[in-house]
Length: 345
Image 1 (cartoon, rainbow, N blue to C red):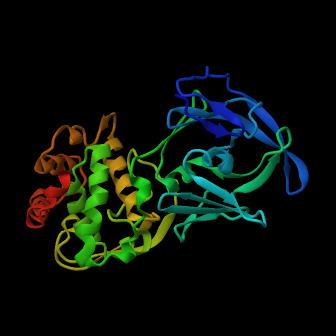
Image 2 (cartoon, rainbow, N blue to C red; image 1 turned 120 degrees about the vertical axis):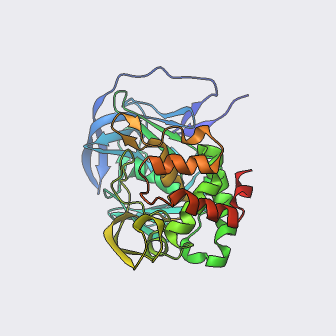
Image 3 (cartoon, rainbow, N blue to C red; image 1 turned 180 degrees about the vertical axis):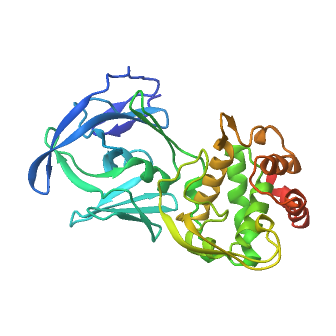
């Protein structure tokens, strides 16, 4: 049975594998803003859900290319036949992509995209080019940020010059904003998202939910409301870099929060991570817990080796996530009081 992936007029058959091509430094002839130009960089190979969809070759009709520190991909060519619908507008100044509940709009010459209506900062400005050899016209976008907006797992191997994109099952089905969730609805809305995350990561849904409840004040904190950030994630954290949008503001922690002790209202000013939805906040928080390092060892080693929420909480505390002596008992109390373990099943 053949599985078709038509990318830049290329048809791949399931089971077919391509031998790795030598990495090519390239000068790709294009037309940009009506003038002859060229993309000077390194051709990058792209694998999407296990299939080679962009070969590391100048013969590709719409190649992906690394220019400086940015890897650009032709968004409509790459995504349109992989479950993501992509449409150019008539004026030719933007591309709209839809993936389940997610809608991402990239604008030519604008250093931002809109993800379900939320403006998200880009590291570079996308731009349209026409590849002269194939006459394919497409918008070049930064692949790492595009992947984040769709909830795709992204990795890049600098040795082989290969990008790998993987689908996280279920993550595209919803895109929930903290502003749309009242305190009384928080558990009901958060539960299914945390459970899907648990299936992918092994971090118990009850643990994720208890942390979110305390750290975001049931989703009502300034940071959650402005940046869909449920865990106070800052831009710079060990083992988990963030190249996305920042929310540069003030987050308030009320009296009694475990992280900062008791007795007063705490005002924290920092560059925090901004997400387009709470699904992405949970995914990124889990990525941090799984990948954060303390020197050569994982900071939270063994976290997913147990299905005991008390043990997971203890591992998180021991790794330095929180300094409060009551951290484990406080979150365990939340899990017990609201029967959060039902979401671990």
